[in-house]
Image 1 (cartoon, rainbow, N blue to C red):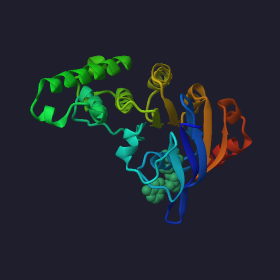
Image 2 (cartoon, protein in one colour; image 1 turned 90 degrees about the horizontal axis):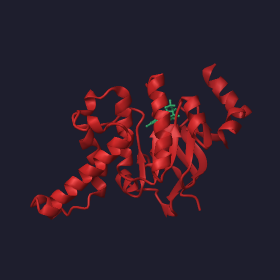
Image 3 (tube, rainbow, N blue to C red; image 1 turned 135 degrees about the vertical axis):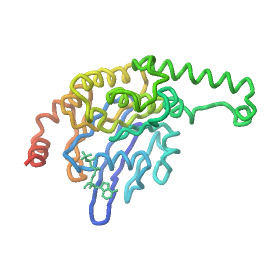
Length: 254
Ligand SMILES: Nc1ncnc2c1ncn2[C@@H]1O[C@H](COP(=O)(O)OP(=O)(O)OP(=O)(O)O)[C@@H](O)[C@H]1O
């Protein structure tokens, strides 16, 4: 059984079918791309999978458990984590505080212990900080731990978003256009980072990205959406030469 199973998923906005009859699967440990021209329904699909929107029809199951109707925080606690197209960091908090917020739902400390500031509260606090620092180190952000998120350069803010999403220890990480707005050097660093996440963390990744060379470079399998419908699925090599996909992209640019 696949880790995530999406069956005949549909979302209407009034008369517009933003996602129509989409069925797909994510297997454990896979790095899968989701591409398509502007307005194809990619972000709407992520919003359906992470509980931001409720589907009009169809189902999403994680490890056999139905996710339909569950709230985003419940879905997050079940192991689905994401980043957003527009950076959503707590800009006036430090880098490490942003990561600690990501870890919040994994916090083991008992509420009473934290109110009373009992020793186990401090033990847990410092455990979490150590863990957050270790994560930041992997992504070369350790020396920025006490910097306010808003003072990081753009590429590092995007990286921090990924670290924060990883801090929830997800089974599946959804990345929504992580290279948007990045310069070529930042994009190259990101490519390395995505590979590193795949190697060092035991997770499944789905990636929306307009930067074709990035998608073709890092993913193992790609789904293509156009006008809310899946028009192709295959390896990067298959997708590159797929006539229907080429038409969709040329049509989009015409
Ligand atoms: N909340 C909403 N209300 C109404 N229409 C919406 C809403 N969200 C998205 N849409 C419409 O649904 C369609 C799909 O949009 P979506 O943002 O999912 O596409 P996308 O593939 O992510 O596009 P892009 O690559 O430009 O980010 C578009 O026509 C969009 O205008």
